[in-house]
Every structure is written in structure tokens, then in C-alpha cells.
Image (tube, rainbow, N blue to C red; front, side, top):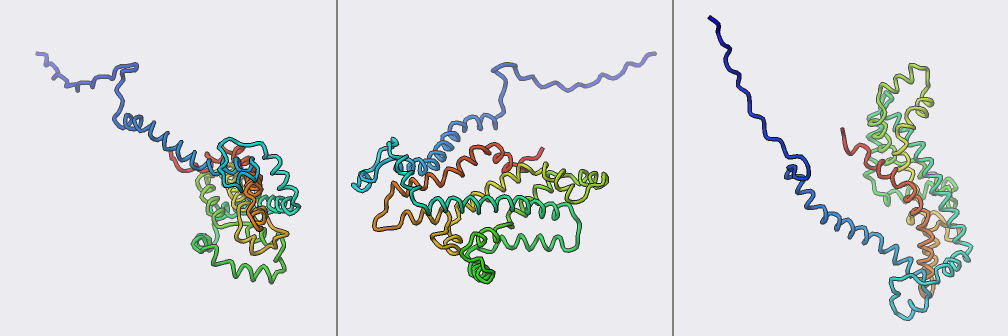
Length: 303
């Protein structure tokens, strides 16, 4: 007598979503889509609020000073005196020297920060030596000290070393930063596997060769962002150059302060100098925009 197998129970399959434009959309996605126009409107408002001061500086710098002195507000349309006002700015020999000083200080500190911070980050991330965690903790602790508290000791040190009034007073203290060391340490830790470093050692590469051929290509994007931010901070620094340098040998920010000095403020001249001083940073951001975004967002999303 044949015994029939018990019937198997099959779970009913859920109905498939219809294909095409009538496919079901999750509720969370629908909420995000509904918030899209509002988010875009908010981003547009923030962008306009951020760009408008620079555009207004450009507009005022393109007009003559008579309209400003008369108390009338210039229109939002640029005028035809921008080249004339820029020529007036460059007629001051101190402004040419200030631009050169700022390029030298900002460029040197940017390159040195990228090089030294990546070297220190490689050491803290991949090398094993006694006191590594303690030294890294000391670096992080320095981030908690306000810059203003270190001005007086730094001024005394710079004066004792004979660097007061020289560009070395700005370059030497900024050759490497705690932020750069910590940032590059995180970049090396996340982007360079330990196996890759060990493979380079097995192939006979030394520390410097491993750093140059393994670490540098892996953290190139983060290093570019660090260099750009260091350049920007050094270019826009006003507090320490005002203390360490005389006005006749200052940076571009000191020169802008000199443009605003006098019996009355020539706003067209001053804002023309602002436009000229902002151009290098704007050009750098425009050229490196994609690399900046990828470098800042590195490590923010896993997967």
C-alpha cells in the first residue's frame, strides 16, 4: 500500500509591485522627495547669503567714491570703475610687497603642513613605538588651548630667536599643526591597510620609500584639502601678523587695514583691495572643488 507524502505548505508570495511609473515607493523615500524643493530652497538661500557680501564688495569696488561719500547706495549692477580702483590699490608699493609676503607665508606653511603632518600621521597610525599613544594624546590636548593664550610665550620666543619683524616669525610656528597631524593620522588609518605596509616592507622598502610610494598616493585627496585649508588660514590670518610684523613689511590683511586707515575711509579703494585679496583663495577653491568635497567626505560614509 503506497503512502502518499504529506502536502507541503507553501507561503503565499507577496504581490509584486507593478513595473513602470506606478511602482510602489517606500514612505521614507516619498518623504524625502516631498522635502526636496524645501531643501533646495534652503540651500539656495544659504548660498545667496554667503555669496552676497563678496558680490557687494565687487559692486562697491566697481563704482567711484563720490557716490559712497554722497551717502547714496550703489545699485546691484556693477559699475565701470573696477580697473581704475584696482590700479589705485596697486599704486601702493606696500600692497605689492604684502601680496608677495602672503604668498610666501601661505605657500610655505601649506607645503610644510602637508609633508610633516602626513609623515607624523603615518608614524602614529602604522608604526609601533613606545609612548605612541601618549604623544598622540599630547598632540590632541594642544587643540584645547586657545590660540590667544599662546601669543605672549610665542612673542617672547620669536623675539629671543631674533625673528621678530621677519617672515620667519610667521612661517616657523606654523610649519606643522596639531589639526593636520590628527587629520592625516585618521586618513592613513582608514585608507592604508596594514597588509599593504607589510607587503612594502617584505619587498625591501624602507620607511621613507613606503611613505612616498604607499602612503602618499592613498591620502593624496586628504592632503590636498589640508594644504588648501592651511593656505586659506595663513592667507586670512590677521592677529599674529599684526603682532609679529611691522606695517611696512606686513601681509595682505595688514595692507587692507592700512587701506582703511586715514581721515576718511575710501570704501571703493578698500573693497577693491578685498576683491584682489580674495581672488587667490577663490581660484584655488574653484580648481580643487571636486577634490575638496571628496576629501572632506572621506570616511563619512562606510560601505
